[in-house]
Amino acid sequence: MERVATGIEGLDKMLNGGIPARKHVALYGGPGAGKTSFGCEFLYRGAKAGQNGLYITLEETDEDIITNMKSTYPLLTDLDDLIKQKKFEVVKPDKLQLEEVANLLEDRITSNDVKRAVIDSATMIRLSFDKEIEYRQTLFEFLSLLRNLDCTTITTLEAATSRKEEMRFDIEHFVMDGIISLYNLDREGTRIRALEILKMRGTDHARDLVPFKVTPSGIKVYVGEKVF
Image (tube, rainbow, N blue to C red; front, top):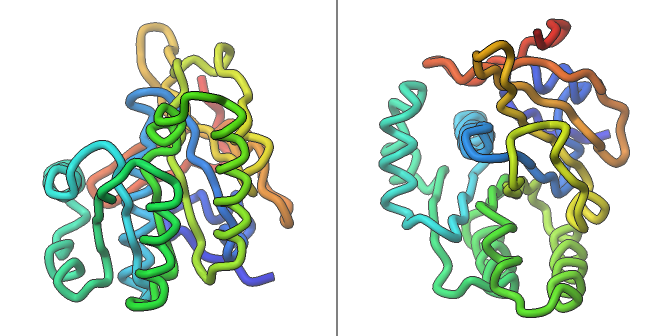
């Protein structure tokens, strides 16, 4: 099986080498869980390995996203150079529509050989629909299109809570190829970040709940350690 290594220490081990190529995976978590960090590093590691990446922001401006990335992650010392070389691109669509996102993806895949994409976030698109059935139908069509593109995609998905026991399953959990849940757990007054891979179609994967940290040198997933 062809896989796309995320480049994130520990996560690829849990995925037996990486995300299956051309699959669509959701990063699901509440505020402060680390969704943007994972998406950013996924693209950055890919760009350094020769795979062009596209970050589609649906809420903040592209300038704000780039500024936040550079100020938050010391790892990204050469981000400006990667952007100039079009190996790492941040774009905000003119319209908050899945059709607009699909057209943008197709254009960049064709014109710039984009192999990795992050969409931030599906929740913003969902809020733009008046009826749930319309969102579901459009999401199915969008994912069908993505599976025909030569690009591995991650979409962030907002949870209403960071508490694991209060999270609920929704339509995205069932239709997307993979779900990686990120948590910001309260352990005796201390916040501990943790993740688990809820599903990944087409491959076996680790199912443990494991801690992770965002460090100056990148995200570290501590495989084999317990969340205390």
